[in-house]
Picture 1 (spheres, rainbow, N blue to C red):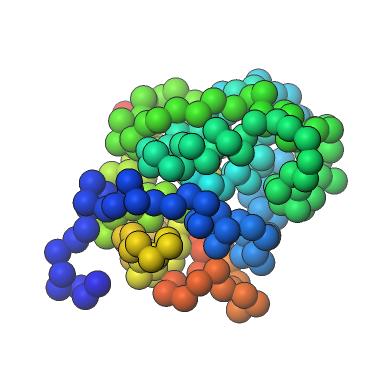
Picture 2: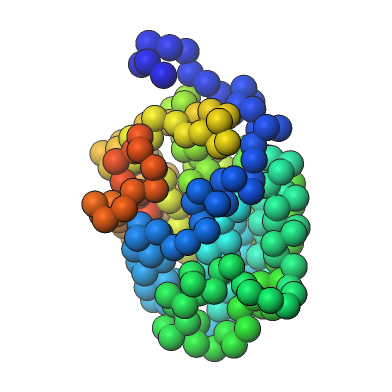
Length: 256
């Protein structure tokens, strides 16, 4: 989309045509180097931020889609994980893939990256643990309840649903507002994404840079933030973006 074109807002995207199975195959059928880098940094942050693995937090993964590794990262410290989603096919996919059962577990290679780390070692059966702890909720990011959860993630959501910068910023603010003061959080974005296709259907993305992200974070009630820019020189997920950006931090103790 040219810079002069009108923005494509979230409610204009063809979410009813979103093919969750194809999106999973393209993005999470194997562990990509960029995701491995994010998992390494995100797990380190959570170990330091949350301390001993006591499952007492109410956690949320906003816009979970077909990506279960953010929820897996929170398992050692979460009593309950709410996975919010809006696209119907994503909700169906989550119901099918979060159930415990026999046979090969597709997310084992992702779990293997953290299985021997402090906190994660205490989780002997992550598949069953996630199956027992999760709740799937159909919820728009713009209607999230305020100050509800004390641990949260939002990976590749706010930037992958619109080309409108104001709408993107509003989505980020709603995620931040859904967390209680003092809560650790993580967000992931695609840098300079030009949009993406799922089974031939185009979907919008807003263009984010480390500089624009820093400017946004400076306006939010967050503290101790850090931004990781991945090295995608080994293998890119797809063409049309520069890197992945992982934000970690805490919600400020006092904010309005």
